[in-house]
Amino acid sequence: MSGEGGRAGAELELAARVIEIVRELAGRSAEAEVNVRHDAEALTRFANSRIHQNVASAVTGVRLRLHADGRTAGGSTTVTSADGLRTLVERTLAAVRVSPVDRSWAGLAPPVPLRLSAGHPGSGERSGLAFGFDEATARADPAERAARVGDFVRAAGGLETAGYCRTVYVSAAFANSAGQAVEGRTAEAAMDGIARCDGADGVARLAAARLADLDGAVLGARAAAKARAARGPVELPPGAYEVVLEPDAVRDVLENLAVFGFDGKAHHQKQSFAELGKEQFDPSVTIVDEPLGSRDEPASDLPFDDEGTPRRTLVLVRDGVTTAVTHDRTSAASAGAESTGHASPVSRSWGPRATHVRLEAAPLPGSGPGTGGTGVIVGSAAPLVAGMRRGLLITDLWYTRVLDPKTLVITGLTRNGVWLVEDGEIVSPVSNVRFTQSYPRALGPGQVLGIGSETVLLPESWGRARYAAPALHLAGWNVTGNASG
Image 1: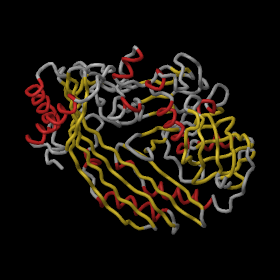
Image 2 (image 1 turned 45 degrees about the horizontal axis):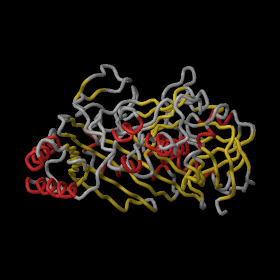
Image 3 (image 1 turned 90 degrees about the vertical axis):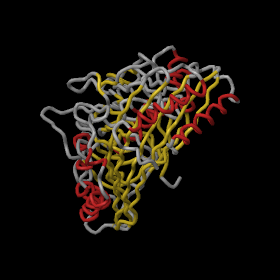
Image 4 (image 1 turned 180 degrees about the horizontal axis):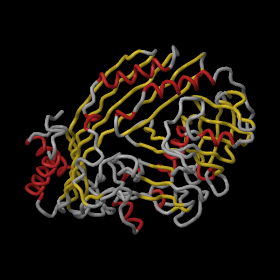
């Protein structure tokens, strides 16, 4: 752990020191990238309706990627003393000398200023240090998280509850030997909890740029209402069902589209369903990656990627037409394109990935931001359910696995509440089911019968990604069995 993390400019100073050491030991012909990142995460967990764990960590890490004599190697350390930084450079240089020739090296990002999202007034150059950053969230203490957990538990009305409330603060900088030097910071809060009633579970989760925007009472009441309404489920036979996917389920759809579909490396290798310029989705579908936030939401990530490329809003699908895929510098060079600012520590191996994906909502006349509701049906899913003749209302998807990456056929299970709907009314809870479905085909032309009027910000089940998802009314969803088989 480093005491320097979190002080404005501390990370950029460390990055600059590493570049100086590289020039001293390897000469000016070597190309170097340095990422310095201070991560502070605090987590309050609860189970059996009691807080059982408060944990916090704060670590400053330095990552170096070095390219010399046609070869590339990387190294990292959490020892940020002068000796620790010099040792990092020496180890990385030694690794470069025994590495294979790197024929895919795309060079360093040139010096380019950071910018705001196009959705924000006054967009232009900025340091990235303070825009959209909530100091109160970054400095939140256990009592503030515990208060929200307490609200969640009380609102569940005596049901057994479990989950977490977390806050994350990141302060980071990037520098390379080509002169690019940028810094930024971000904070996030998230809450995820379930309530259980007679063996039935209900869930509520939310992500936000401000801890103050998380209302534990609203989330606890929603989870409890779903759990009570999911008791005594019936089984349904396999078949194609009309469905309304609530935002939690849509989050899984967006995540899989981002990881396996809009990845520029997979696209260039012909392993993705994405076909640029083709109408692959219903005309009502617009999907955007918004790492810098939107007009309504503060920035949700650092304003630059792991190669120092400024992040920007990227429209992946507009009015049903696939318009872009994500690139780091390596995939962009292979495809004859430009980096879209999606480099990560693993993007050269696994491909660049969009991690702040929004499916645009379809606002109704006179509608405004909603609370998400505390009943069985979340927020703007209600009018979609009212328009369903016979089908399923699905809260959540989990344990989803890819069967065919090219067509993105996914198999998985439902959880945390499924209900049979007839003529716009919920008539019975349904046992969890297994589905096997191509996600792009489910959102294809003519298959989207409606989109909710508001999005819900949702945390990723693992990692730091964030998704903005409305409810979706789809014409068909392939149920292939019950959860037991």
